[in-house]
Length: 142
Image (cartoon, rainbow, N blue to C red; front, top):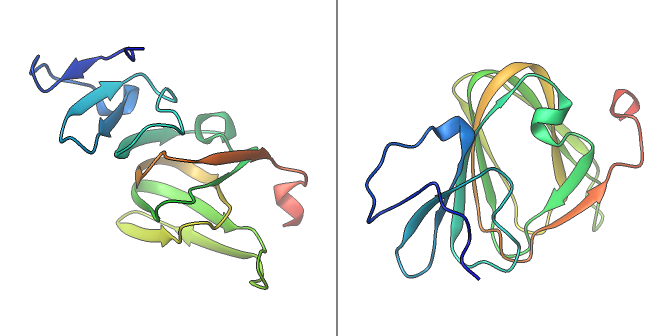
């Protein structure tokens, strides 16, 4: 099945970073896709820019985990809270990331982002095997 594509290396068209996900597959092909369309069975890496004003913009009510790669996240404006769930004997942790800061979530670590103030965030991870789970608690009590 061919995935919908906004632009490919052969079409050489400008793409709005905030309205797409860029997928870099293992063959070296780069495609720009609509948000949330890269699936967990795809090889390669996904790069996205997210403009987050509230929790819906950042899927704040779902834990996410990437078993095959670390996830890189960089905040270019605003601030977000990066929550790491307790697992494998590691306690829960929360980091505040502001403009010009970045962090790496280790492969296999459940995490979620919470908007502290309207933000622009860059992420890079492999979609292969990615999992999501609904949050079962109120973030205010984390």
